[in-house]
Length: 56
Length: 169
Image (cartoon, rainbow over all chains, first blue to last red; front, side, top):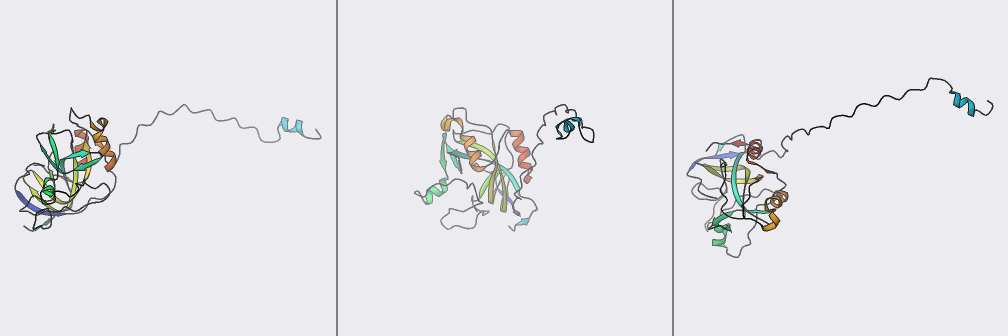
C-alpha cells in the first residue's frame, strides 16, 4: 500500500452484518403453453366397467 | 485523538499480492512483490501469512515496542484507500485489487484509512497483462479461496457500497 496521508480523525465502527447482499432476480424462462385439462369421465359406472363385471 | 463512534463499517479499496489463493499484504519493488516487509525486518524467518479466509484477524504492529493497531503515529493497521482509480496500477504480476470492509478502531487519513479489522469483500477483475502463472487463474483462485466475487469496476463499487460507508477522498 502506498501513502494514505496524514491522520484526520479516529473512529470506532461496528462489525459488518454477515448477510449476503441482494442478488439480482434471475430471468425466468418463458412458460410453456398450458396443456388442456384432462377430460373428466362422467360420474357413474362406465361401459367398460360394466363389460368387465362378472355377471354382465 | 479520541475515537468517534460511527454507525457504519467503512469500505475501502486496496491491492494485495495474490499467490496460490492467498491475498498477502506487501509492497511492489521494481515489479517484484515483497510480502509484509515490516514483519520481515523484525522477524526475517517468520512465515508470511495471507489474510485469513475464515476468520477476522485483528491488525498487529510489528514495531519493536509495539502498541495496539492501528496507532495514529504509526503506519500499522489494515490499510485501504477511500476510492478506486478508473484504471488501478498493476505494478507486478501478483497484483490484485479489491474492496475491503473495515471496522473496530479506524484511523481515517487524507486518502485512506488504517483499521483494526478488515476483510476482503470482492476482487477487481483486472490482471497484469503478462501474468501467466497459476494458468491465468490467479484472481479466480483467490476469489474462490475467500468465497468472494470477482467483479468489474462498476459492479465492485456497487457491491462495496452495500457493505458500509464509502467515503470520498
